[in-house]
Structures are given as structure tokens and as C-alpha cells.
Image (cartoon, rainbow, N blue to C red; front, side, top):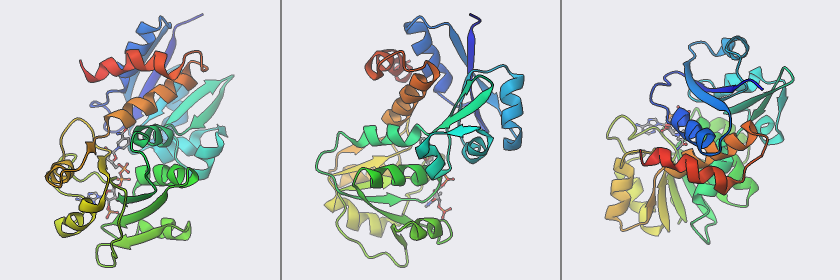
Length: 265
Ligand code: NDP
């Protein structure tokens, strides 16, 4: 059998840890495959590019997760529901789409016990998939976003939504930064006055950004809260994608022992 080829598509894509993560797992598990990165400028060319490069599967990152959804021939029920795809596998010439960000995130926060209410700061694409899975699992998710526009969809879906101007704080078990504030700047994801009200009541504060201590996590520490960054979410979405890539030939733990080395190299 020819070596299977996998890739991550995104723009930008040079920073992505996915090639290292997946190649470590392929190597460690002695699976004959290779994973690379591809700068995809135009999401409309995703399907054509996939076949031109002779790929077996891909992960998709910003800003093409919706284009990936539209490129698939068959969708997993959860991906179908949320309209966002970050993993595609080719089978007999057809593209099958999945979302592994959401179950990866769910697993990442499962270490926090007795959590019922969650405050999401931000309402972008990542919030879309993760809010949906959290609600399916029985969490109550409230969204607080800088601007009104992105909240409309959530409001229609029955979530409680606020802008900074309309916010009526309640106690929340988890406060989660779902924005890109703090990724390449030193911004907080919401006004400090609001964070200073919600953080003291939280059991923990979580950031989906990984690889740095964001201003959000620094502030949470001043409130003496347990904190967690986005590394486990990234690792777990990768492990779940790897299971799709390899037809579930390996357990989560088998893959994890190899893939997690990407975070120490
Ligand atoms: P989107 O571009 O879809 O959404 C961005 C959100 O951030 C919007 O709600 C936007 O608000 C808000 N925002 C941006 N800047 C600020 C700011 N300065 N202050 C307040 N709000 C702000 O992004 P994604 O959902 O795709 O990504 C969000 C984060 O998730 C990124 O940091 C990304 O790196 C991270 N991520 C992590 C993953 C992991 O595996 N750990 C996986 C995927 C994403 P508005 O509507 O007002 O513009």
C-alpha cells in the first residue's frame, strides 16, 4: 500500500503544531503515513486541492472550517448540525467531514467537576461548535460578546446572550475565553470590571489560546483561580482526528502517548 498523505489546510498555517503532532503519532505507532501543511488561500478550491495533492485526510484551520463543511460529500451528524468541519477523510473518492474541536474541548474541561454553568467570552467559530456540544452534555452556556452581530445566531438557538452593555452577571462555574484577545496582543477578552465580577465566583478559568499565558489567565491567577490553557483542547482534537484518519485502529491513550510529545519538543 502506498504511503498515506495527510495535511493541515489554513491561512496562515506556518505556525500549526498539527504536522508535528500527527507525524510523532504516525512514527510512534509505526503507521506508514506523512502529514504536511498547505497554505490554502481560497476556501473554494479546498476539494480540488485535496485531490490534486493526493491526500487521504486533512485538518482544517482558520479561516476555512465553513468552506470545509461545504466541500464534504457526507457529514457526521454533529458536523452537519453545527456547520463547521475541521477534519476530512477520503473514502472511495468521497469526502467525509467531522468536527473534532468540540469533543476535544469537552474532554479538556472534563477535569473540572461539578460544573453546570459556563460563561463564554466570545461568539466566533470556536464558540459555535463548543457551545453546541456543551449544551448537548447538559451544561448551561451563556455568551458574552463584544459586539451584537455574532450573537444573533446563538439567540435564535435559545442561548442566553449579552453584550458588555446588556450584561447581567450571574455566578458561573467556568469562565472561558473563546476570543482571540490575547493571542497576538495583550488584550483582555472583556472589560476588566466585568471579569473582576465573574472570576471570583468561578471554580476555574479556561483559555482556548495555547502556548502563552494570556492576560485573561494572568488576571484569573490574581483571583486565585485554577487555570487551564488551550493545549489539551489542541491535543485532544488531534487525537480524535487521528482516530478518523486511521479508521479507529488505536485507542485514545495509545495515540496520546506519542502525540503529546509535540508539546515538549
Ligand atoms: P473567530 O474569528 O471566529 O471569533 C473571534 C471572537 O473573538 C469574536 O467573538 C470576537 O468578537 C472576539 N474578539 C476578538 N478580539 C477581541 C477583543 N480584543 N476583545 C474582545 N473580543 C474579541 O475566532 P475563532 O472562534 O476561530 O477562534 C477563537 C480563539 O480560539 C482563537 O484564539 C484561536 O486561536 C482559538 N482556538 C484554539 C483551538 C485549540 O485547539 N486550542 C482550536 C480553535 C481555535 P466580535 O464578534 O466582537 O468581533
